[in-house]
Image (tube, rainbow, N blue to C red; front, side, top):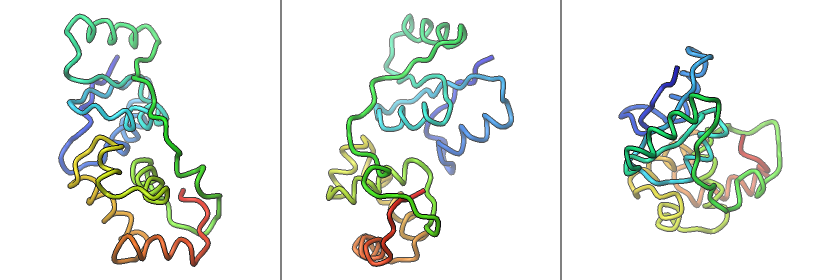
Length: 162
């Protein structure tokens, strides 16, 4: 009845994992179970249709109670991060590249003027993962570095990242 899914599976994207499971097992509830504490991901997973987001440091009794709550139709998520999402920074346009929620969120932080270290800290992920996200974004945008990415967005008046 419930799929307990680790957030970090090597060689895969967490959001895509949830999307695939929602398609293959539409009646199943998904709980993300992770060693990470990023509430950025919890909000993204809630938006993708997961029923819960639990960290591995949760006491056994609390874990059981959370799984029972989801089984009974409830949801379990930590409070959401308070920050400006990319969709509020820039407006919608039809002719731009699309991004999954995590790279979109990271790009929004860059556009808010945060450094790579600040983005890593804000998202509670290591610098390696942050750099990987921006390599994906730059590849999709066809640019070589973050400065070119920002310049391209300004030049082409890209107003929203889908």
